[in-house]
Image 1 (cartoon, each protein chain N blue to C red):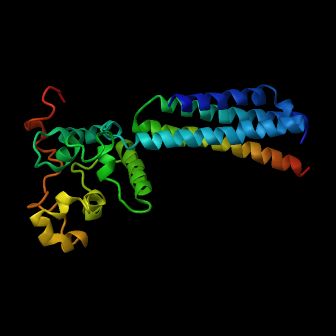
Image 2 (image 1 turned 45 degrees about the vertical axis):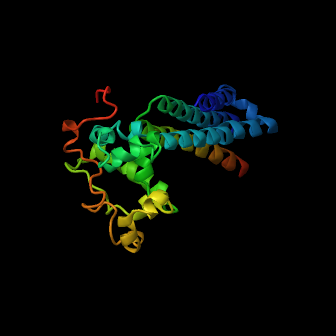
Image 3 (image 1 turned 90 degrees about the vertical axis):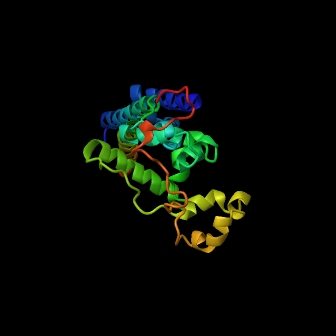
Length: 64
Length: 203
């Protein structure tokens, strides 16, 4: 994996986690059952995807 | 809440260098920082946020934010001690802010989690399913939930009626909510016609 690909992947994973955090902050300003769903399904999914993508990136780079 | 938002914002700010300058991970310290910023801090902030949301789900305001539950919330204000839910709420026999949850969780090892999972299903039904015309419990109300607080209480133990039925009450073979005992819980059919407490509040 060249440096550019690595940087792109890191930027993407960081961006996904950022998006997830922003959704979670937004959901916390709203007191409604839908906010809970938004937190778990929206925020949680983006954060998990970003973390997974980051871990996958560093693990796959280590194998090269 | 403020601390939680602060934690989430800090987590967001820590991500900025990784997103703007991913080349910092070329150095060892940068990789450690990226791991903290992308995995550790957001995970901690996310768990704290989840805890806050779960605590909110226990409030009466949360339960009654769905239209179908509003009459049940209103029934807590019925000005008649024969109405079990109203009596518990008005005399602080359950925490007023979390009254629904106090009685509608199972006092078992995984009772809270099961209650939350049922709550998720209710949200799903609210948006994607068909709300039943009559809301019913999943299973008959278990005396265990009542005895969680009342067992050992003098008022409960010394009641002549309870003394005669103690074995059946404890074995859950005779429900506390039997018609002749505490049969009126949430009289949602009549709630609009009944007097409410406090009187000055319009609901």
